[in-house]
Length: 384
Image (cartoon, rainbow, N blue to C red; front, side):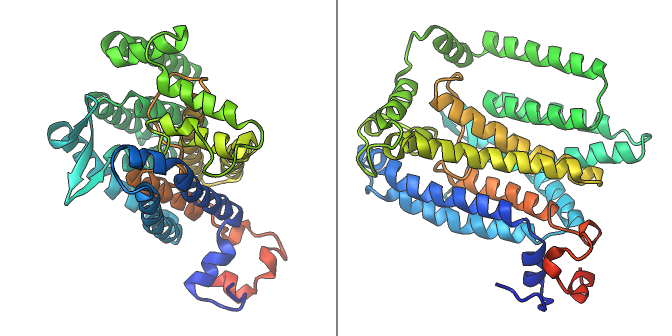
């Protein structure tokens, strides 16, 4: 642990970072590795790979993800905005490239293969989009003559168009919902609330009408008819585990779930470690979202308030969708559980996003209470 007399960047970071957030993120990363060992061997063996292929890769992905999260958390507010702008521009170009040279999986183009590495640009686009929209909303709030809200709407339309073209309607709904929350925080009028609600309802109806796979998933969820094998097995795995689980490595239902290491890792947690662990995982996600929203509401800077709220909301929405599908409370949708599901792009992108949260929520001198900040020496506070 850094000394309170140490004025180095690492020491200043340690005494200003939100350690509750940091502990929650590290806990989820650790759970991701543990559950990868529980969920992935059956999948790996089924497709002819070494039993610990995915678990080993999860550890390999976790190392750069942790490094990215810590590195981003060292940045200041201005650097976060600049990084988000550069990343947004790059990811928009890559999103266009995906439509032409992307890898097609199950009728959708969402991945780019670069030098043998698969990248899903939409995962990295989300945090950049949130931060830039937060900046646009804040600039409009600071100077009403700046059309920040209009630019945010144009950017939303561009991002949604690229996502629908892939198509990736799950990410589209995630982006729309998060943007709506941020716009609401920015003080939108009731006219816009009603108008955007109508647009969202119309978009959902259009998706149901135009995309057969969307209609199929909704119909299967509503009627219970058709191919619901994976969702049914996910629910059965949780039921089989009961309150305390059948024990590590003892799960049987998990062996027949095709995506047990990815979209249905929550079900594996329920089968082998019980509903108790599922509740703990839910509690960690809820803690992150609620703490982020509380911090955002107490923030005086508009940009920081919108950005922190948007980043934890998209994080929370994604976790709710994944767990809702596992519990058969929502139509099936391929969406990872943040920090826990297997996937390199998802893990690193979420780590970057939460690194932004750590950066934006770091304590500032003007926030410190008299005699607070763990009695940090005045010359250390002044050094910030």
